[in-house]
Image (cartoon, rainbow, N blue to C red; front, side, top):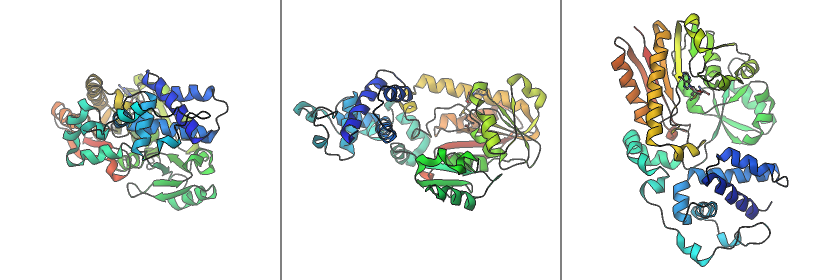
Length: 387
Ligand SMILES: C[S@@+](CC[C@H](N)C(=O)[O-])C[C@H]1O[C@@H](n2cnc3c(N)ncnc32)[C@H](O)[C@@H]1O
């Protein structure tokens, strides 16, 4: 496909997304019907679509409307691309720009210019203070690719060397001693022996730093209460000999965990909710709670535009409930860790204060916010000690 034909494909996919189709589904449906498209075409089209989703409001302002065509015009204009050379109408290229279209757009202002939803902007500023504009600006661009070196089976030097055999260039990142930032050939990772043999896992650097900040006991019992795919279960298990338990309210989310654990040479016991009390108490319980995802909108930008005040209220209520449910599972003198991939105060420090107010005798040991200005995604972690 030509670069112009890829842009036309992205326009059509964005129209589906604007009509309510989730981005991944719209991309898959398009690819299924476009057998002529090669893997490089699919990757380039996906990049266009996600670049727009990260910058949706500024693209709509600059492009004049939020149709797929308007959004792509906005994206390319903001990137300084000469539209007339691409919008030729020849072959599968987009139709030429009309005179009217050339006059539609305007420079975005305020929240639109930073691609933060208007209703959320005051909360965003209140949460991030002086960093608000810079964090929003970073979230308008692609995230770096990070790996976690599995210290159970390897070390940083050996992992970098194994990756290099496949032409994958990775360099240590200051956020965590296990973090590598991939600077070349990231698309080869999932086929590389380093990944397939469990020497490295894909994991954001701040997510690794969060695990580094946990008071992991050398032995005893650790519970990942909201384990999901198990990213943090595996990261914790690689750093301790404690027995590792994984739980999720939706056990289906943990379906790949046994295979991932085998690959990493790590033992994890999967627990149903009804089994938790019998398996406890635990020396450390991590609650990596559901959240707005506002720290990882570079990777999942649709969430930015889907979030509403009502959804935020629901998720903060769930976070508080999860902490209340998990606290009794912690052993006396043990630790309860609360984590989100959000940068919003209402999901982070406000939850800490509410928990302490409702749990006399518990103390706060650690509270840290990682923002994307540090290189990784935005994450928050707090550690409480049980009396
Ligand atoms: C942020 S994700 C976890 C990500 C995971 N820890 C990782 O590192 O890949 C939050 C998880 O919490 C789970 N969850 C939602 N409500 C829950 C509840 N009441 N109790 C336990 N887990 C819950 C969700 O199913 C989801 O998998």
